[in-house]
Length: 299
Image (cartoon, rainbow, N blue to C red; front, side, top):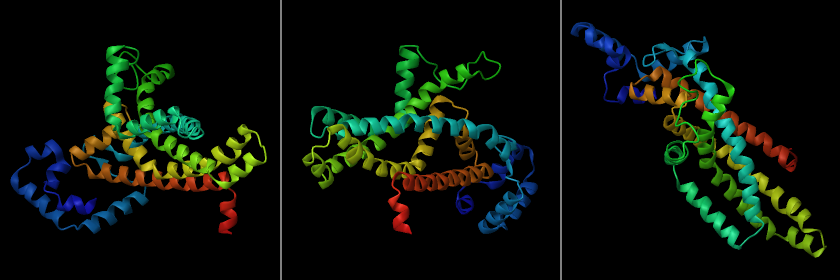
């Protein structure tokens, strides 16, 4: 990011000073540009990390506030949106994928598969705009955006929940096809395997066969997809937050990118990377819980 900042065709002094640069004389601006040009991207990167290790994330030039304060104020809104979407999408994906996977080749399986593929092709911002048009504008059931009502002087739980219905649902729908399709395919493969054929031959009840030999093995690829899809979940959350004016880090990302606020961009980039790494670690640990044989093979 720091290397891109140096090679990008913009004035770093104007980006750092903002409107104050318009009131400064030419020699002062030239002197500042010369000093900034003497610092390489590697030096800027090292200096930024040195400040971070002391607890100083820098100051946001776009929001005129410390970066730590911006993240502390907005991060919980984004994490809450992502967590709620996952809690909605994962169980629905498991149930829908298992239901379709245990009925291979039927009309229900084909309809569900086609619907999931169509939903998978729809970008989150388009789903958000359609949701606003239907549920907020046409039917008037839900608010168009924000996290609280304009008349509210402070956040009320029920008001926040009402405002969260659309963004959470849209983000969950954007992730649902990935989970449901992988469960459906894994369930169908398990049903075609020798273990299920042997269970049928031994006269084991259908419900027990489906639960033990078809649906349960589908949990393993689902856990894998959870870890792989985490970066896309963050990207989807950013798009959904912009569409619904959700007070998370998305608006800060957009504002910092438009106004070249690299202190805030760097902090958000590192934070997103940490979330992805921790999410993949949690997926690996959950994989061992679902299939204890993984730990035995590693040992």
